[in-house]
Image (tube, rainbow, N blue to C red; front, side, top):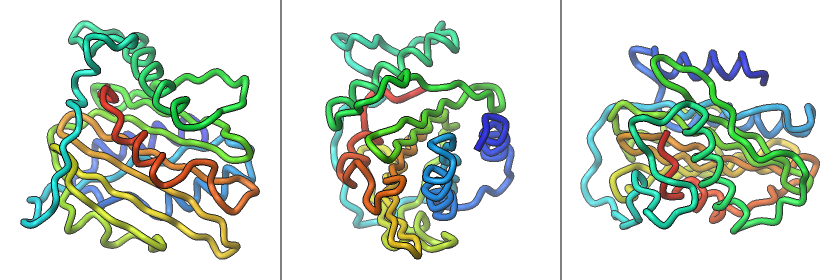
Amino acid sequence: MEDQDVRSALKEYVTEAEPPVGLTGDGVLAAGRRSRRRRLTTVVAAVALAVAGFPAGTAIIALPDRDDPAAASPCGAKSPEETTEAVKARLTCVLEAAVRARVTLGSDTPFELKAIPIGQGNGYHLVYPVRDGSLSVTVLPNNGTLLSTGMACRGLDPAPATCSASLIDGGTLVETTTKENDGHLTYGAAYQIETAIVEVSTDGGDNARPPLSEAQVREIALTPGLVP
């Protein structure tokens, strides 16, 4: 998927009157196929949203405040005066630290998010080679809408092999595993809070299994400070 395709996908996300629900299984599946066929030149489309109440009885897990990367962070803190380049640098710093803490990248490719204009703001995305596979990350601003855990896994086409949704300290985490006919797996995690949406996925390229585990994908999506 080229940058123009990404821009169109993200623009559709912010302009749809009634956006589809949940993490798109076909987007995750297509990303896995294209990464093997087009040598990691693709990105995963943004997670879609639905405005609905949270169902009762869902477990809530406490995590650090995502809006505050912490004063001691070498990446700095979000501020109203930030330029697009400053936001990109801050998010890249936060994300790279989170990824390198969990996997050896082994690539000379620059680790840098790209800014994609959407509506009145910007989305940010990265596709990075990890061993024989890839890691894809998209970070979007959110307008305060929240995603229902009861609806997040409905209507995905093609349906993922597994899909779960849970409340995580002020937001909703959606995790999917997609399995292609040839056995290749793609792991995906999307985390949505009032101010941001983070979508992470990984596939193995020519290998059946992705280079990152489901737990690692989840942990990266939940990284504090990934707020554009």
